[in-house]
Structure formats: C-alpha cells, structure tokens
Length: 353
Image (cartoon, rainbow, N blue to C red; front, side):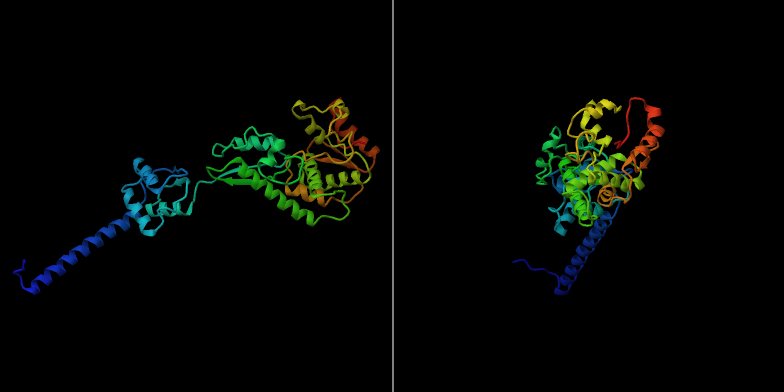
C-alpha cells in the first residue's frame, strides 16, 4: 500500500491548493460562459432563420453556426438543458436582429416569438377577392386554393346555416405566421363577423324588417357597396328599410352588378336592369338571397340603426356622395341633374321608382 512521505499537514495543504485551483478554473470558465451568453451574435443586418416543424434546438443552433452567426452552439445547448427547456422550443420563423445575444435567442425560441405577417381584408371585397388576396401571401399555406365558394363554409367546418360564403367574413387586418393556412385566417374572420353581428343584432332598433341577423348582414353589404361616405351609411339604410316596409323594390345597382358576375364590363345599362336574375332588385321584391360583399362594422351598425326620415330615393352625384329625395318627382329631377346628362344609356341610379 502506497503511503505519502509528506507530513499530513503538507498533504492537506496540497489538497486545499488543488481544490482552490479547480474552483478558480471553474469560476473563470463560468465567467467566460456567462459573458458569452450575453455577447451579441455576429450579425450586421437582420436575418430570418426557420426552425421547421419537427426540427429541434440542436439542428437550429447548428444552422446558426454554419451561417457564421453563432460560435460554440453546444454551449447554448448546454444552457438550454440546464434550464430544462431544450425540448420546449417552438417551430417557426425567427427574426434575428443585430445586438441579439445567445441568451436572448434561447428565450425567443422558448417563447415562440416567431415572425408575424399581416393580411388585410377590405370592406366591399367579394369572397373571390378575399381568396385571391390570401393566396397572394407567400408565407400563407393556400389550403383552400381551388375550393368552390359555395362549399367554403363546409370546408371550414362552420355550421352557420347560411346559403353562401359571400359576405361571411369580417374585414380587418389579420396576423399569421409561417405554417398557418388561408383556412386559419378565414375561420378567424368568420368568428369575428359572428361576434360583431351578434353584438349589433342584440342592440338593434325596434321595428326593422329583418327576420334574422343574416338578413341584416345582407342589408349591410348593400349599404357597404352603395356608399364610401361614412355619414351616408345610415341614410342609405334608412331609404332601403323604408322601401322594404312599403313593399317597394330596392332597385340597388350593386346587387345587379354582383349578379352579372364576370360578364359585367363596368357599364350598367337599362338592358341589365330588365334581365331576370336572383340579384336583380329592380325585378325581385325584398332583399337579395345573400350578401354581395364583406360588410364592416359601420355598415352593419347602419343596417340595424337606419336614419329616420322620409327619403325613398337617392342618386349618385358623381363625387362619391348622393342626393336623397322623398318623392319620385324630386328624384327624377336629381337624376337629370347628376346623371342622365352625363351618361346617356349607361345607367347608375338607385333606387328610381
């Protein structure tokens, strides 16, 4: 058995010195490690890096290392394991900005602060235009590309009991991240519309000629397409409501134009107004069978709170606003003043008789 020739006191001193050296080296190493965690990455400009679905922290850090952005990727992996978060990072695109440190990168991955994009659905859009807008977004999965609009609500698994997806979405700006689909946006938009419609319907005026919130939405879409002047929305709604109450035809051009579809060339003629069709409100009594476009909250509110008054007619002045009339004689004078002298056979007046 080996025995030290050193006195016990000397052995203890050597052991203490060795332990002190180990502690010192450990302290230095830890200090270097902590400083490295808070040292900015080698970034001169922002860069977007993706952690794909099914990926892991190791592959993501190796990617940063291969790009020359992160030295010692195994160090950050060790920190993640110490923190118990190595398997808690979230897939997605991450924007790395100059000044970002390894510690902040790890925090970002665990929190899932992915790159967020935005798409805006505008009042007055048709569902075809909505789908086209969504399919222009390069980071949004076009899961519904090619889907027929009449089956759209079914594909979204929405049981609204509505005959059409037209007007079934709320115009607003929606945020999304890579990996989301057009269906995600449409579902969020439809739910937003139902919330707004339910809220506005609950506070509606008494005595309105609507049997359901859906009919109010149809009216709101007509108001949305008839005017871009905020102050006129309730006036337009008032005219339409009074005409419905009196059993008069709505005679609203935007509904006729919607019904013409792709065949409409921008010139609405008297022949169009004589052509039968479900959206021809010059021939058919009551509301059209569905909305004709997306209606914003202001238009929905106007449909449910129409302005009081006696006007039963209005005609476009040509500057975006309208002239309102209580009698057919007044309306005909307004038509002669604002339209017939300018447009010949082209007709743009609503309603007229």
